[in-house]
Length: 212
Image (cartoon, rainbow, N blue to C red; front, side, top):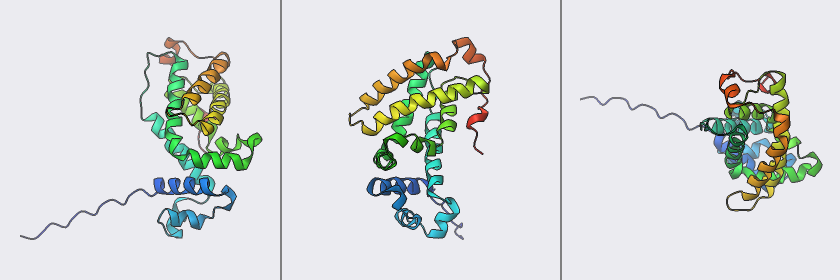
């Protein structure tokens, strides 16, 4: 009996390896001193294979942001929780997803300088991500009100992000406390909806954070 041809295995997705290699190198040297060829070699790819996936280092950061967003969005929230609690859970899941890359992010933030720390999350597509985090928490991010929420939530996230980079606690206790404080301060400006409003709101994503 003739053997059936064996189905070829699907090639492994190289993107996680590229992201991991990039952030590992970012922990070891200045962001501006990391050549693309070194990232490709660390990820086990030829330069042309790498080029077909990413045209720049910033594109790798954008891929990290998208994958972090996807990790958060894959876990449904508890619709019975108050809106601020849902936001807290969503953003902490985001910090958990970024934890393996914290050393690289911390070095990048240090190189950029404390006053320019907001440049780093901006490179990680902050407005787009914050819009999706609102949607994940069941809070509308569409229209003018949604655009304001995106901006306010971004400020709260940045406040906690600064603490996250330095948080050496076993369970991110300091980050949780900083995020809780930031969300409490931001709550009046966020204009969080009542439960009925959240359920009735359309689930379409807001224009301000759509990718171009």
